[in-house]
Length: 211
Ligand code: GAR
Image (cartoon, rainbow, N blue to C red; front, top):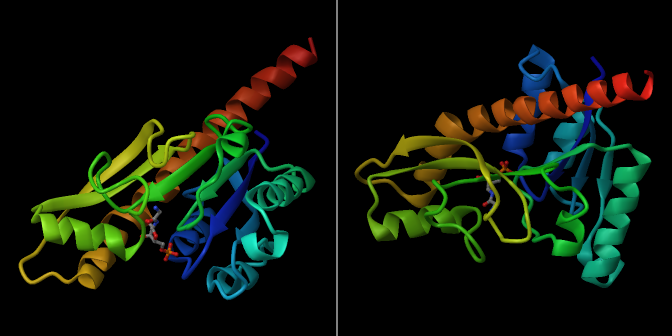
């Protein structure tokens, strides 16, 4: 079966990207191939991780492009150039407009570091999510992979995993536990699941075309 072409969008450290690259290498992701890593800032360490794995990289910044429209137009151009069929937001700290998300229905997935619908939506990203969870006093948190639509963190849920909050947790300690126990497991698993569904659909389409 033809592999689904994947682009991973990042903004920072890229530990989730690393989990995806490792999963592809080990064969845990077998239905897709990571063909492009895109960052919205040139200092994202994720870019180094991609280079180390031999994956092409691109940097598109909001500041360089000047407007949200131009920023997204440049990203769309790159996606077409690489023939991308699935976009994985792995710590991508920029909200994409409806104009963009509507072009890839059920073709964009995102990892969020809480159990949606808790601690999600505008303003809930990175460490802030864990600060909010600790401030609320929840005993269980976790991570969610979901499809991306026009509502921030509002698309259909694909996978979730719960993680216990420990006494004396700091946002940093909790973030690390959520990454280790949930994010780095469910993101590659969801990526394989969706890549496989897209690959199967493509195969059926080609079959019909050839009849
Ligand atoms: C991860 O915890 C991810 O879930 C979160 O940012 C971190 C990125 O880490 N994403 C969001 O908060 C999106 N709303 P990474 O760069 O090491 O993968």
